[in-house]
Amino acid sequence: MAYTTIDDPSAHFQTTLYTGNRSSSQTITNDGNSDLKPDWLWIKPRNDTVAHSHSLFDSTRGVTKGLATNVDEAEYTTSSKVTSFNTDGFSIGNGASVNQPDRDVNYVTWQWKANGGTTSSNNDGSITVNLQVNQEAGFSIGTYTGTGSQLTLGHGLGAVPKLHITKKLNAADAWNVYHESIGNTHGLRLNNTDAKEDFGFYGDTSPTSSVFTVGGVTNNDRLNTNGGSYIFYSFAEKKGYSKFGSYVGNGSTNGPFVNTGFKPAWLMVKGTSSGREWFMFDGTRDTFNPFNKYVKAESTDAEASSNFGDFCSNGFKVRSDGASYNASGETFIYMAFAEHPFVSSEGVPTTAR
Image 1: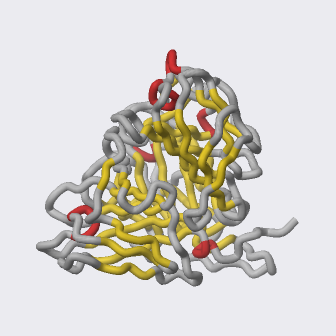
Image 2: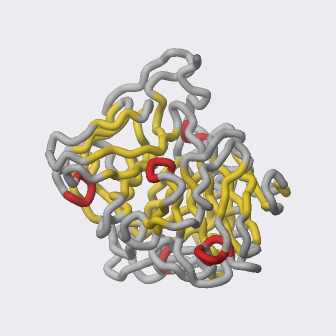
Image 3: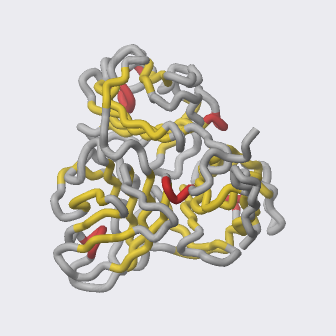
């Protein structure tokens, strides 16, 4: 069996850093090995003295429609943030959370490729989903309208998704996260630090290679209100490129080693008990071990530092005894994307940091 089908992860995911230019516009060009036209774009100011929300855009809804993971607010309309998705990056206006107009601010942006904004109708489930899919990288973006009764939704991945993130667009409501490691009876909210919840949002049903389930409105207005508009971002694992799993903390500076099968480029970690933040790390802000610069998905806080651990050639090693990501006996979920597979399809190994 091949080591991986994706020798160049930068063709599907990239982290890019930039500094605002105090102008009404700016074009950000990616610097990965491959050109990447993003379909899902996630931007966060790193160092401003004023708190800013995360800014998320995707090519399905278009550049004028934004979301923020740190709040449960509905989709908003803007013309001053992202202005275009380009063949090798994106362009922005002078919205403060993407390009502060009166002072120098540094930003981080994470970008995923789907299908170049080209959508089609998927009828694998019980209702039609407007879908764009990158099966090679195991990523799809879908929009649908709720009915109030239990539904199945086609995700188009051709493989069982390990994680999906869902948000109501036309009203204030929580971000909802399904992760295989916590099962089909539980979920998490991306916009807060709450523990995993025991609910019927996913109909207590695991996804298949063609559909995933959302429960009826009795216990599920966040995912399936009659007439509600929703978006989901769905992920399947791809060997050497992406991994969605969990580890158990040991409360030691000699923490767990997690084998992902690749050298990580990006990592998000969340404890499943209450009070645990969504920590986001990447190998672009931290080019040497230990990696320590993080922002939190549920927070407007600026970037901060904590010696979390090391990115290794085939995974990551936790080197902090901090309870937020290594409490003894606690389960932590993660999602990770690759800088380079541990071994390429031609048998070439990656180097350690």
